[in-house]
Length: 361
Image: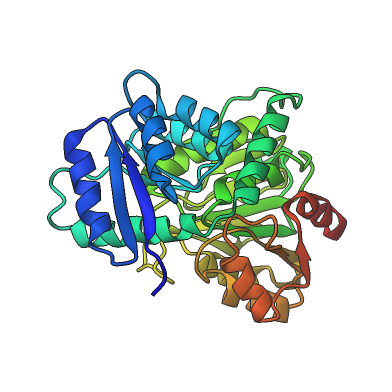
């Protein structure tokens, strides 16, 4: 039998530490080797216990989780799953942690978890197992990317659009070409790396990232601050226009539908597909049907297989397809499955994907 994954829980709440320990200990492949009540306690226990993975609370006394993570990734990189509060502030801090190299995040367990205990347990155990597979090289790469981006020239500030109200459609060009992009684990940072390198003149981009509903709007706002394109939290019926990016809400499937002389976003409240809602396959299939060969398909880092079959269908319609390579992916699940299916025309490093998109455009 292979050795269990050794986990150290770092959280200032006794109750949360107990709940997480109970959940993780239920999985025979995971061993909780200890818990720490603040970053200083965690530092000593990391030295003594040598855990494989950390769960790290975002908000703690003495030193916040992000400051601790920054020190950890600089001195002793190791896989971390953040435990975040379901608030906009919690989302902002969590995305900063992902910038630094945290592998993934879960929302903080609620005290009244009776009806969702099993689902939450499965989710956090799955994410711990995924985090354990992430290499030290990958963590160091993400931290170095974070440091490099600190020194990069800022994107011109702009107000995050909350809705389509006030848009003069006659002054904006409908997008006749659409770029469809899907991602999961590690995707929030991979998407950022792509959007940072695309000019405002890029055709419209539709994005499905596996993310909780409470976090998708803060994510869209965050992407808008780093991109020359205008980034929207997609709304039902919203026109798809060149120079704009549309991110699926965390609780709806995003679909692209042809309407009149252009395309619009359609939000679908159907059941999860591939265990996900939004699902990448749902979006890719809608683009296949509505846009066909005039689209470009991109599949970035992520756990599982969502998007692989949809990419194959887009390829069959002569749409160019791009999969992120294994070396630059946090988790080579989704793009890896696409490559196995022969669905990827190009298998590229994350750094090379923006340029390839522009060449194909």
